[in-house]
Image (cartoon, rainbow, N blue to C red; front, top):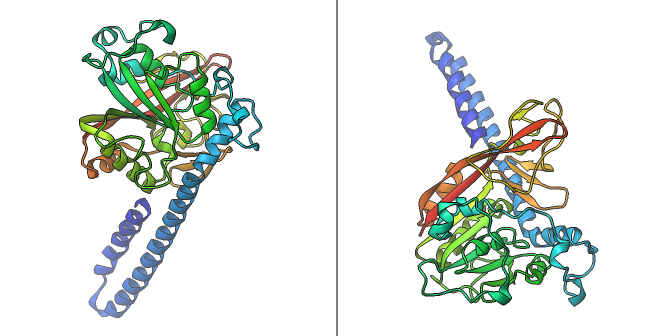
Length: 366
């Protein structure tokens, strides 16, 4: 779209002087206009071809996502990434997979899911779950909610949420069998509070049908999940969210913003020694940081495959997007609501560098 807008702007700039030529040069003006139209058409065709190529590359990365994320979790579990994940011996212990930090900030950011006591003090320490000493969730409680978490990984979002609200029930799905095996092996895992299963949401229009019933969940959560999808799959998954949600249910997510420093290559938004740390409107434990200095730090996540889409060295896809695109995708599926940008400062105290990360957060209602 940006390339097409540039071509249209170029057309206006060239056409204006042509209109001011003397009448005796009409033939020359017409020829110039014709030449410009051909050039603009060629530029538009080139832009369309480039856009199509980028879209195809993103779709291919999405299709390979299950295999890429399985390799990722096997590597972080200390397993041989090339060995079969179907073997019963391949299930890692939960403690062996530490790819990301627990996202405790979700107690504050996903307020729809929290009881009043937690909302009054979201930063208060919450003890780990001890299934053997806890009663089951109270389904009659006003705090009882059924959640579907997309791309749950090893539970870095699910466990903090379940600790904070003991009356939650979470359907946790991920495309990696190793991630799901690790989540289930976690000593905090309680089958009365969580149902973990493997599902590849890129496979078809309603990949969770048969596991998650129509209008059966109160909320769908996705934390750094939607960025692993190409645009077409993103829209299909939004449709699946709508199918699974009860009327009035919400989609809550946190993901990468197009304005994030990692989408630009060099370390924009960095400060040298002496800068203050902390967060602004975001939260701790995003699972990513940065090293180096402001003068030469390269934060690109991998290979750019066109626009704001990148393929990391491990093959996983990262699509940086903006508020308008995300909002349009949800609204076109019949949701109401909005998303907004939050920032988070990552401090490397050893190098004296502060990097400002930008994320999108959203809340959409069925």
